Image 1: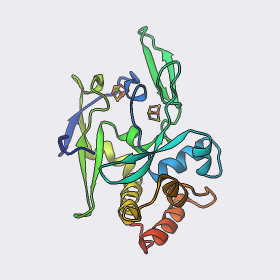
Image 2 (image 1 turned 30 degrees about the horizontal axis):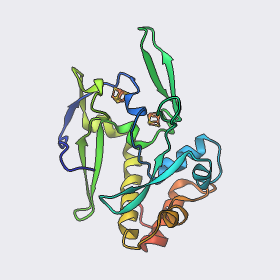
Image 3 (image 1 turned 120 degrees about the horizontal axis):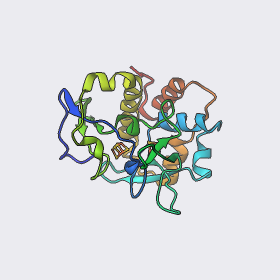
Length: 213
Ligand code: SF4
Ligand code: SF4
């Protein structure tokens, strides 16, 4: 994540209008390990490898951190849009965007928007930044004040999982893996176990620890 977004200390102004601008066009929706688990669960798949083989998820190089990360593959016709987006005509005559994954299976980055999470590996700490979902996001204009602590409260467990995912990426980023190796070694796992146990396994294999708290 770029360094020039403002840090949110306590409050920020936002209310999503469900315009779906951030679910269409040239958006990149980065996923973490738990997002893969939730998405596979929603689609009733028993293994996250199927998200790749069914072309729902692809890998994209995170050049800033020199790792490959999973992203949602947007449809390209009749325009670019997230495959989980449903558009409906609203009562006001405008198109409204609904997310099929909302609320339980939605990627964390979408649930937290416009709050972006930055993990500082050296300090082992998180910062919360105001990241406009798009340049035109109407939700940031004349919007009510949100209290950061309250906004994040439902997502504490998921933020903790993401924090550990970022730690795993730190552990593996010097391995020189190709995209295919990232996919096979890190992003392909069964849903047979509860996610916390899978995360413990991943930490043990790649970081030599199964500490998840
Ligand atoms: S662009 Fe902003 S207002 Fe529109 S759906 Fe995304 S977050 Fe909501
Ligand atoms: S997962 Fe949902 S909120 Fe995120 S881009 Fe797709 S439709 Fe939009």
